[in-house]
Length: 373
Image 1 (cartoon, rainbow, N blue to C red):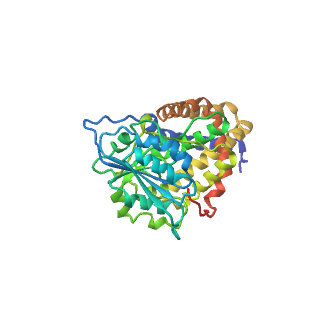
Image 2 (cartoon, rainbow, N blue to C red; image 1 turned 135 degrees about the vertical axis):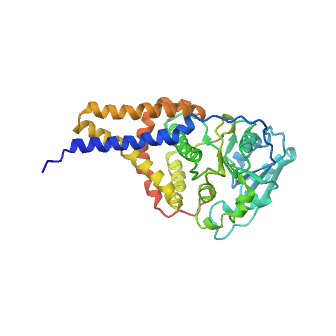
Image 3 (cartoon, rainbow, N blue to C red; image 1 turned 120 degrees about the horizontal axis):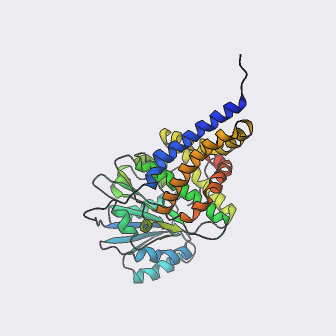
């Protein structure tokens, strides 16, 4: 019986993982890299209701809400702000803004909803109070990157479209933490936007998300996920999105940006809370995401082991194959999504994802905390 050569096993395992990773970059992520904005002969101008839920967000409302209220949109739009039991000066800031902007509709909530976790209740109230069929969602800490945000997002609708996914990014700041936060956010968007382009939508982010009011009521709102603290964005899209009814917008003018966390603990708490919803995704989504995460997680450990125990020249050939494809796809995608400054760091940031998964993997099976977010 021939002896097992562990060096060969490690190399073949590394080669297999490399092939799987290259598949994701060429089949999914290339759709972002080569994405082209479709020019329409006739632009659409649907009435739009922008909905923002806020709790104790007086500073963010003062800073960011004017950017939503001064949108250059030739058709009708309203901005519905649900002030959810705020104890700060949010009420007075909204009253002052309403004097200047007649499109602002403020809904004051003074009671908590029992047995409905997170912001699903205030968001549901905002949707019920809205006037128009097209709902464009964002957060109080977000500001549109241009005055054409509403126009670009609603223009993606066609006869079959019920959901439009946008990119919710973070402001560029100095420091390593900012780069890590922005890369993780870009990396997540690279996945959910490319999957949607491939006809497999599985999530969206509430910082920049658009869907029809009819879709919301047809699916009885958030009734099936009311017991889960998060998920008002990703789980709703996971349940209702499909190949025909979901479109994406990748346009510098259609990005929203928010202020990132400035401390490691703040970011860790935020991300841990977000990952508690992944366990509720559809099985096919969990398989595709799990396979990608698993192969990305073991990629560099396998690379190091194969270099040590096998012919390093063949290992470098496999590594270089993925590296060149990855470098090209990330450069093109980062350029389209306004994150080009991250590209020189992509190898380091890609290696960092190994530690990222180690930190946040426990959140996938932890019981989520009851938290407004």
